[in-house]
Image: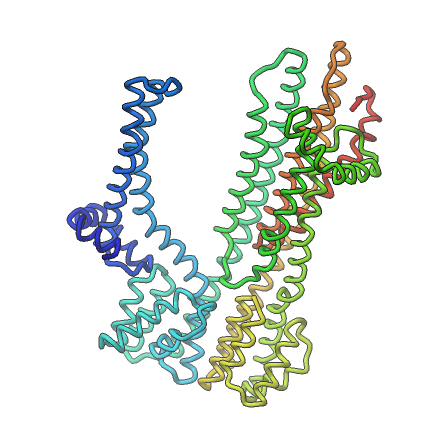
Length: 607
């Protein structure tokens, strides 16, 4: 028996009651695409809550008994009560809540995928309709479409096929059922409108063409709104990251300087580590997640830069950073002594580079962590550049080719002849693919085979879906100039919006570089300033120790700032590898110029 079957057999009565108490749960389960009976899933939710209670009882009861009997000295009575209370209530509520909210999260995720697929679904159905293929046959045909293009709609097409072919339902009824279950307003309007138009004897093709134009325009407006929100997100991140860093680093530097003079206020080294190495990276990770939610997520992209990053760059960075920076950060400790002796050749090499740049003592940890980050990220940068050169310009070439295809198609040539005639024109990185396709068309190779070979070489979803629609239109004999005109306009508008977004974000991209330089300079000048103050009071300040302590997290967070900037500006974290490299170089530049800047002050500062 499966887990859901066991839960339904045991807690079926509770699952039915839960569905009656929360009517929206059943709708979320059906709309989420989970292939499970709603009452069975509700029973599963209750089962997870009961399982959490059992787990909490196993953990909390012994803790409560130990604290009551004072069997363990370091577990006082109050702490035992708190841990037991959390175990009894927090664990079951957590498991129940995760199981309860999962269908809603799945529904939201599915809806975002459908927002991307439905406009092209409409274009696909319209293209097929112009060739004499009815929409419900098009949906059945979509069940065999490549998964990489229509992930969610392919699943729904399989359900539609089963309803019509296996269960004997009327195609229009099956279409209406599908429209009711899918959590997408545009899909509902498209399917319900088609069913109504067909029942009253209207012009189905004209309705589909108009609906496709409206969906494509709506998608364009959504993309434009996303670009504006992304710009606001970039501004918010820069404000939070820079202002928070400047304020908190100032407080920690002043507090540590006063601590060395015996006048420490609130704060400690552990709080600094928590802020610099945990809180600030979490803020960067949160904004990467927000950008991922707000931006359109295409199901196809080149993952080779991420393989290089996690397989090569990250291990190199962690190793070099640990063996070259930790000896100076933990100077005087056992681990610092061990690393200093075991990795002396690497440390000497890094020290020679630091001396060649004219960096004084105390900058070792900051410079070494910078150099480690640079060496580690270089393979990922090269992988991203290669990916961009191979796949980056294909969509632009497809867009230009589609516009030329529309104009040539208006002359009355067949789509096959149009492709062969346009093969000698220049379309950037798409040209080599177009020449191969034209040869294959001339050789009589089936079009679906041609598309499969093209899809195996290209990692760009927009380019693939456009070529797929073109191939399908040729196979069914459709592809009228009107439909191709709408598709070409949509592709051109998306490309224009992408250029507009880059122009909008280009000034904002400069802010991380300015911020990284400012933070490094401010931290170093502030340490030097506090050193001068202590000298006036006839006290000493361990400036080298403080610089080795404060510089590494500043460099690391500048590096993370580059990853966020890449994700926000280019929709891919891999685009941030270049920004991370340049920001780290900018931090080294700030370390080089700061001593010369400080020497020009009225009150000379000694590092």
